[in-house]
Length: 314
Image (cartoon, rainbow, N blue to C red):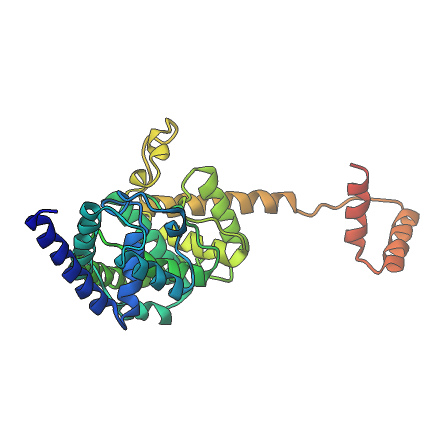
C-alpha cells in the first residue's frame, strides 16, 4: 500500500468518525442518512450490497440506525474507493440537503384537504422538474400527511435552502387555494354523490392523477379537491398519455374543467329528473282498492308497490 493510499485511508477514517459524531443523538440525521444509503440513486447504488443490507425502509428506527452504523463500520467490506466516494457524498448531502422534521410539523395542525393537495402538488411539481412520479398511493389522510413530510424530508437532490423555500411556497399556494375555494360551493364534504360523480368524470376523461387511488367516499372528496386545485400545473407533464391522446387536443384550464364538471352534473340531474316525473293513469276502482290493500298489508306506500310490480315484470 502506497503512502497516498495510507493518507486516503486515514482521511476516510476521520470523515467516518466525524459522521458518527454528527449522527450521534440526532435521529432525523440518522434517518436521512439511511434513506441516502438505501436509495437507488447515484452514487449510493454503485455498491453491490450483500443480501442482509438490502433493506427497504424498515419502519423501526433502530433498524435504520443499525443499517447506518453497519455501513459506517464497513461491515460489508465495500471496496475502499467506493466506500470513500459514498462517505464523501453522504457528508455533502447532510451538509447541503438535510432539514429536521420539526420544520415540517406545521402540516400536522392542518386539515386533510391540505395534505391531499400537498401530495398532489408535490408529485406535479417534482415531475415537472427533476423527479419521477412516485408509485406510492396513500390510502388514508394520515398516510397522505406522512407521505408529504417524507417526500420533502428524503429529498437529497435539492439544497436545504431550496427545500425551505419549497415549504414556504406550499404555505403561500395553500393560502391561495383557501381564498379561491369559496367560489366552488359544491366542493365540500356534504356532497358525497356529487364527488363520486366528479371522480368518475375525471377518470373517464383520463384527468385523474395517477398518485391517487381513493377507496372511500371521504377519500374521493379529498382526491377531487386535490385534483381541481392542482390542475393549472401543466398536467401533460404528469400524464403524457393525455397529451398523446388524439381526443385530447387541448387540455382545459382549471376554470374550463370546473365548468365542464358543472355542465356534466347538471345534464345528469336533468335526465334523472326527467325520468322521475310523475304521470297520472286511470284504473278501475277495484284494481285501485286491491293495490291499496296490498300496500297496507306490506306496510309500503302505494307508489312503492307500483314500482315493485313494474320492475318485477322486467
